[in-house]
Image (cartoon, rainbow, N blue to C red; front, side, top):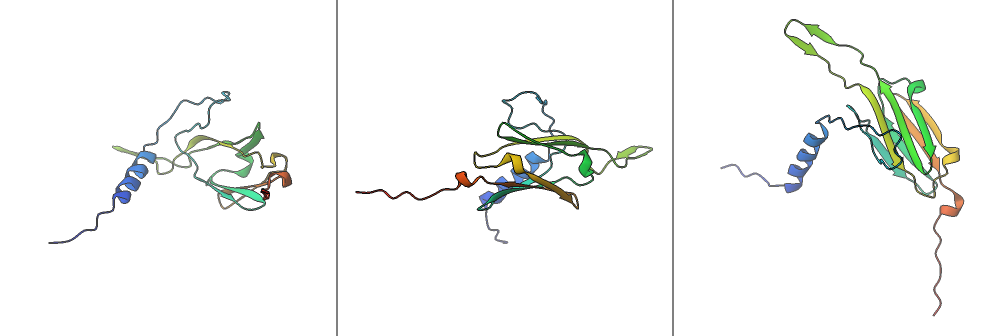
Length: 148
């Protein structure tokens, strides 16, 4: 008999991956201030890292020319949007093949009060969009001594 180690979190991770791969298309509410996230046929993966003096956003947007990426910061919300066009399709008798996801994308993120939206720097290299958002000096925490 073969023993298999049971890991319930692996099952949840697989379920999450399958759910993410469904490629759902939700209705876009581009002008709606209350919408927190709007998705499309493909969703660029975004990593967010906080350092002592800045926030760093890394968005995977391969195949998109940097001039076609629109980044805006308004009312405490960072928005990344654009469109990736289909590169190639293969259609022959009996089948159709498209291997890359394409279409419009639109991601919104709430920025903390400590983010300095006036000094955001954006760059793109090898299909990765990097946004560096410095923190305000006043946003840094300081320890307050409580007297008895």
